[in-house]
Image (tube, rainbow, N blue to C red; front, side):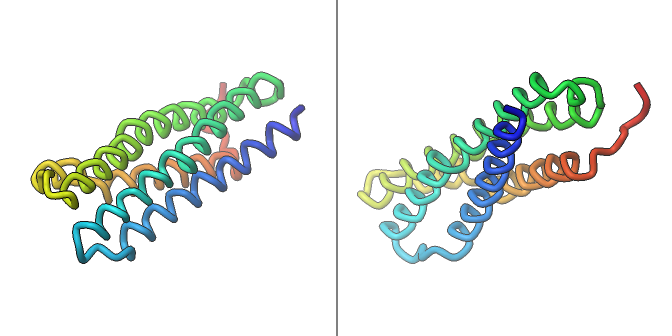
Length: 156
């Protein structure tokens, strides 16, 4: 059971970082010259968020919690609890910021491409998109760092 949970957690981390990287690459390099190509790029980002990013995050969070339950040495160290708190922060940030905005931006971009959308509304949705992605990537890096180096974080 322990090895299965570790495997799922590792695969989920790979999926999460891969989805974030793909999101950034698509956002930076996809064609955006016309409203239709911009809407298609936003649909791609929404699909990445819905089918890769969010599921990977969910599997990572659940497998991390299960790892704490089934592997007794993971119940006491502070790094494990710090990692769990970061996991919940990542879940909240990804769900509320990245995924919600990806879906809203895709819908608004599609409305703009069809002639009925509002460019100001879209600008408001994506205003801090790069900063949000940077924050989620930083949390991901911190999570990976805690899992690899397992610092003591003080005595208990």
